[in-house]
Length: 159
Length: 298
Image (cartoon, rainbow over all chains, first blue to last red; front, top):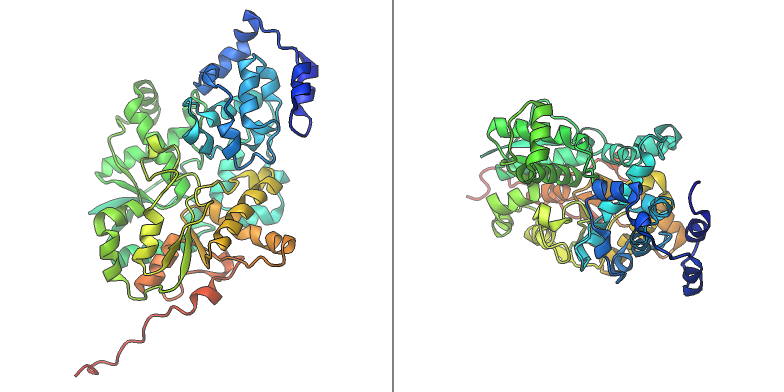
């Protein structure tokens, strides 16, 4: 990967971030960080203003995938707020979001988090190989899964 | 009133029980569902990237075709409903998106058509109280968990289907059929969706939580209108039983299958090959009363 490797490595490792670990991240923000090309593209594709997020954590609290999400959803928002779009694109969380909308239905700041997650996925997937390949799915899944799931999954997880 | 019926891909493949129970129930209720000619797959997911209009082209084409027929579009699959309803709203509210989609599809559709779920048609055209009078096999004593999942409810401001935190429409239907609707904590939680393809363990945790929640509430059967929810909930049970020997399997059905059973429209409204958990043991007690021989009333 390119860019500041260390903070991303910390964020992508299993388990939650503690306060000590958060302190280790270099939090110096520059105007350039917040106006980077990645930041601009994320805003255009998602249409969301993530600066509105005040980190209440309601999204993570109600997220059905929170047990697997790493880091939890609201911390992905935080990464984006800090201009760390590249790091947000490398989280496991964006691949777990099923766009169920429980978070956006409850967000007190009116942020549509599934749109942010989809924009982050899109920025990874466009021009890159698909994350899910039909050829790699077990035969019994291909035979039994509904067309809705196959079409939906393969569209969501390819560029 | 004739509706432009959009069945979607799954109904003609993996969910024939959903398709056939819908046809028989609609016929029994006098709801005219005329399958749209040349419909196309809606794409199964609504694209959330705002620059991805290509992902709604086929839904836009279907909507314009229904409008040309002069009919409201009716879907029964939660995903088909979700994608068409949101695309319709996009075309009604976003002039730029509408212009691009119309140019590509070569139509002049403005999003003014109506997209309905069969549950909404039953509520509006029949009414759940009146439905009680149509029931020939009351499902007395059957405890049913109405499982909504995500796609029918959220985002509410676009779908306007029901209250996303406290929905009622499935419970109203279930009670209309003479059964008992059990309220359970996870009825609007996500089943894990297509993560069952990319991350089966995570999807399994979601589906397991829903099934355990329904069981705790005393449910004997779960009904849904989403083929992917059906798949995830039905397939998760063997694994759940391995994890917890106390777990009792919970049959999963489409809401139309319960409807067809109660209306006496289809004697055994499920196809055993489509179920991992056999609904037979729970539902076989509900039978159409044997018809009286002609003239016996005299």
